[in-house]
Image 1 (cartoon, helix red, strand yellow):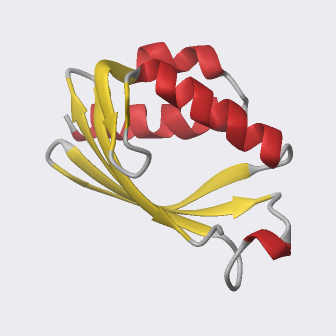
Image 2 (cartoon, rainbow, N blue to C red):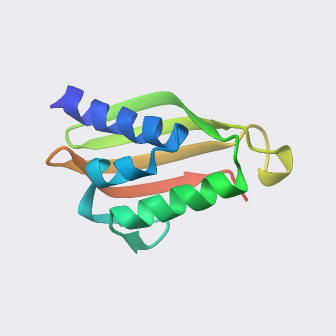
Length: 115
C-alpha cells in the first residue's frame, strides 16, 4: 500500500510540473476536497493548477520530503520559478497532507509561504 500511496503523490506533482491538467481526473477522486481552497472535485484542481501556472509560468514543485502513514501522506516541497516578491521570506515552500482512497487523492490540507 505504501508504494501505491507514494506513486499517486509523485504522479500529482509530476502532472502539476508538466502541466498535464487532464491527469487530475485520474489522480483525484470525484468527491475530492481541498481544505485550503474550500473546493471539491477534480475539476477544481484543474482550475487551480491552471491559475497557478498563469501567475507563475516557470513554477516547478520539488519534493523534498514525503512521509507516509497508512493512507495519509505529508509532503514538504520547494517551489522554483517563483519571483522573490511573491514569498514572505526565503525560498517558497509548501507543506501538504493528503489522504488517498482507492488509489486516488480524496482530501488535501496545506500551507505555503506564498503571499
